[in-house]
Each structure stands twice: as C-alpha cells, then as structure tokens.
Image 1 (tube, rainbow over the protein chains, first blue to last red):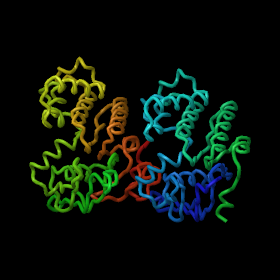
Image 2: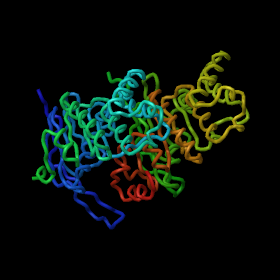
Image 3: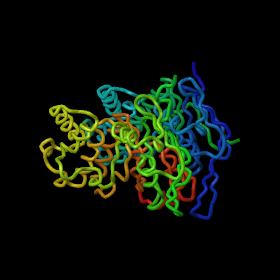
Image 4: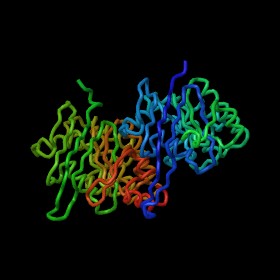
Length: 231
Length: 261
C-alpha cells in the first residue's frame, strides 16, 4: 500500500540579491503538490522556471520564505522548512536522497569510497558498504579499474553515473533527481532509466526533472508543471 | 533519562568580549551536538579567533556562559570552574589544532615524543604501549614509521600539521578546536589534510569547531556554519544551505567573492 511521502503546501521562494540593490527574484509562488511512495513525479517546465529550486528546497539546501514541506521520515511527518539543521541532516542520511547535476567531492577520495560513504554514514561496515557500492557501480557500467581513482578526472558522463550511484546506493525512501541523464549517451541513459524504474517499483517516492522526453516517459508515473502546481 | 546524543556537548549563551572599547564578539549563542562539526567563517578581524579562545577558556570573556558536557555526564561551566579543573577537562576531553603547527608542537622533541607525551599527560606510563600508540597514530596521519625519532623541524609544513593532528587525537578528545587548520598549506596538501580530517572526525565521532576564512574548507569539513561579522553572528544554518542560498548581505558578499566555494 502506498503512503504519502512528500506533501508541499503553498511553498514560496524568492531570491533577494543584496549585491544588486536588493533585487528580488520570485521563483516559487505558492507551489503545492503531493507524492506517494512508488510514484515518480516529473517536473516539466522550461529551464529557469524553478524546478531545481524546488528540489533543493525539499532537500533543505534552499531556504523558502513561506510554506511547508512535509516528509514522511521513519513514519513521522517532519516539516523540512522549519526543522533544525541536525534534524535535516538526519533526514538526509535516512530518508531523502538527492542527485544533483554535478558531483562535488574531495579530490583525493577513491570512487568506491565516494559511493560507499552514504552507507557508512548509516552505520554499514566497511566491507558491506564497499560491496554494495561495487554492485551499483557495476550496474552503471563504471569499469572496475576506475574504482580506486578519484572521480575528479572522469568524463562528464562517468561523473554523472558516479553521482547517481552515490545518490541511490543507500536506498532512501524519497529520491530527488535533478537531470540525472543530462550528460549521458544513449546506452547510459537506458541504464539509468532502468535503474530509476526499478527503484520506483521498490516503493521509492521520486521527484525529478528529466529534459529527455524518452527518459521522462519511461520513468515517470505523473508529469506536472510548476505552473499547474501553483494554481 | 536522556541519552548523551540528546544533550548538547557544548552550550554557549550570550558570549561577549570587549577588548576595552573594541568589540571582540557580541552576544554569541549556539549548541554544539555530539558528532557535529561547526564552522565559523568571516573575514579577518570578524572575531573568529576571539570566539575560539573564549570557548576553550583561554580568554575570559566579558560576559556569557559556556557549558560543556563531560565524559561522566555532568555539565561544567567552563568560564567559572577552577583553573585546575579546566586544565583537566582540556587535557582529557579537548584538542586544539593551531594554524601554525609550531604553536601546537614541541619542536625540540621527536615526532614520537610529541604524540606520546600527550598520552603520558593523561596517565599512560608503559613505554612500549606509548611508543606503539605513537606509531599507530603516525600511521593514521600518514607519516612513515621511520620518521618517529625525527624532530618536527625536519618535516614539511603539511607533515607538521598532520603530526599536530596526531598529537591532538591520540588521547581521543571529544571536542577539537581548529584554527585555520589548512591555512598556509599548498592546495594539494590541503586536500589530503581535509580528507584525513574528515575521515578521522567521522570515524571517531568527534565534535569540532573549525574557524576558517576558506569557504571551500567549510563545505567539505563542517555540518553547520556561523557567519561572523564585526563580532556578531549574522547568519547560521546548514553549511550547504548557507553557502548555496545565503540570506544576509554580508554572507552573499563572502560567497560571491570566492571563485569556487
């Protein structure tokens, strides 16, 4: 049985640029939506309309001015907007995973450790975390000879797949995907789309942006625009 | 009964220091939780080092309260306890990593002795065990074991900084203060040190307060940030939130002044 995983109520986000005379950029003007477990909601708007902003608000990375973002965290409902920082970190460890457009890591850390880290943060042993990281890297066709190297020097497509591996390895019940296939070739896109569908069928609630129509049609169960969601 | 994870390790209220007409810090308050790494950022002269000195009891502030949860579960008032008691807490529960390793190391004794004497200060007496622990810690900070009997002045800046970290962590402190821990090091050495600090902090479950003007360091090392300007906290929050969506004009200026935060 599916449960409501995310409920966003009347979310408002405006950026104020103090360096430019206090210029105000309203991006989200009262967005409301709900996502259940096993659903994949695709946000379909042109670039610059606030899709990434919405995902970042749900992750606690951006601070909205008003509204609520209620997530189901281990059976309890928590509002990300008003939660204390350490609570948000706990929610990120256990409940909400996020795949950003770009990978950001410490230069020296090997790929296998980069991917295993979210599992280590949940208390998995070094061996268990490494085994699961290896399995998902393999699934995303990152050659084993690269696992001991830092992903900093990898190609854009390889970095993106490492980023996806890191975002999916801990099997969070809620997943936010920001253009997960943007720098991938056809084979890479197919692999990632397969994986996303599998994750969704397992009961994960997913919100994402997929500018590639084929990928969007394959992975999503519902498509909305922020314009509709703000109605 | 609350477990220790539900109680702050360090509680700071109303901390103010006035250097006779010039303000060091004003009305600073925050809680530091077990396992949390807090970054304090701001430009030179914003009060970062004053705050660190007040927190660790090396400078007595004009006003305020600093409470610390000790190993045995009692809360002590850092600023009002006796000097003897404060020194005991500092020796057993705290570490202090200085920007300049020369301020944190004894330059005229060997690397091994620099690590070992901290163990002796908390009661270790067995020479073989002390030396074994020193060697183990040199390994943790990636200093070759054949350098154990060398003087720190024969080490590079990066090695000295790693030795200072080993000297601080060998006694398993619960709270580490770091003042610009990667300042003055080459970029490649910085990355190695950051990686090392990050894994040690995570593995040992340490709490730390890291003062730095380098926003990239805070992104990789800290969970939460305080932004200081002229001694006052102008903004605080999750590190990535403060860096990616800064709210205060001063924070926006700091973040936009960096090439790659």
